[in-house]
Image (tube, rainbow, N blue to C red):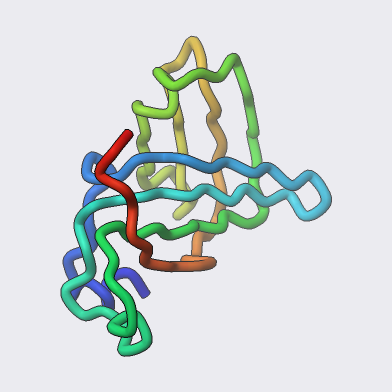
Length: 122
């Protein structure tokens, strides 16, 4: 889905800010939200109705295993790594080996996307 919005070249995680993490123990899932100023090159037609300068998307990881939390701060939120793991799984890390959130999942999907107009004033 992100590939379609970006013409096959979605933004790298270094171009995105992690702003949301939700772990749901009921179905062993983790949803993470990212925000970027890199706008889609192939936006949805309904997005043309209003101005926007930011794009956010949520990734839904299902059947999460090996979930660990060892502290959480803005420092860990800036250190994001999503990579292939043995057996076709996905390894996700926010932070380093001593702190942060770490887990594996067999699959990921884009759960939601949206554009919005953000203020230039912090």
